Length: 293
Ligand code: PDD
Image 1: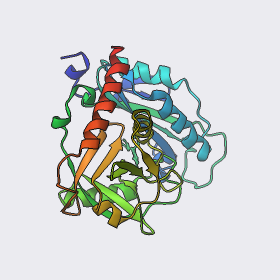
Image 2 (image 1 turned 180 degrees about the vertical axis):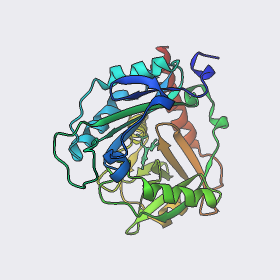
Image 3 (image 1 turned 120 degrees about the vertical axis):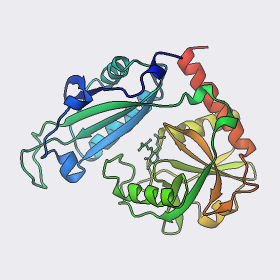
Image 4 (image 1 turned 30 degrees about the vertical axis):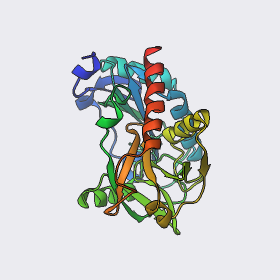
């Protein structure tokens, strides 16, 4: 057991310049993150106390902050590394949220003088790099309407549409909800989508309808390096049901095989060979980055 796995519920959070006990962390009821969802966030995995794809997450954070014009530029790596260390290191997922701050009253429009609210906390996660493909639980998913706005490239905390579809999935006994807009699949409620047909890997192309997932990007890089052909393209529900394999990807779950869509098995309903290969490539890279071996 490493130091991190002994910490079941990390209690130290970061709030506006201080590392304090979670119970002592307080923000204003007029914070615009609370009132309007006027804020953005990141979820970054740390394995053995080391940030995984931290630089890529911070590029996306900057994109989100600039897109909604929140002027926050802290030394993010130092801040997050210290938070993880103060929570015992190990395998943790770090949540970082930056809101526009509080004007001390409720008003939709804002002026540029507000001090952003910066909050970060961590939760224990599985050491995916240390587990084998057989230990990964395949997913069942539903497909439902994408009710979100048209700036899904911004990782904004206004997640009500995502929450509604994820709850819908849960109530249907599924693990994730894939969303569809204008006849095209976009992504999962909290993940990106991949499918395999005849040896080619497909994923919806980047744009304002989906989040540019850091894991999505890594999967495509690994595919390129391994000579696995891939295409970023439009995907329909019919193509999904006829796929040889379907996967979802996210920072905290890496790449997960989808075995069933809307109650119908994908191919033979088993984890596919290309997923096993990608899982191998992925966890190998994680292991190498974390241990230097
Ligand atoms: N979600 N698409 C959506 C809508 C997401 O919320 C996420 C991640 C992803 C995958 O992005 P990445 O590979 O960078 O984690 C795609 C995080 C984990 C969350 O909201 O908790």
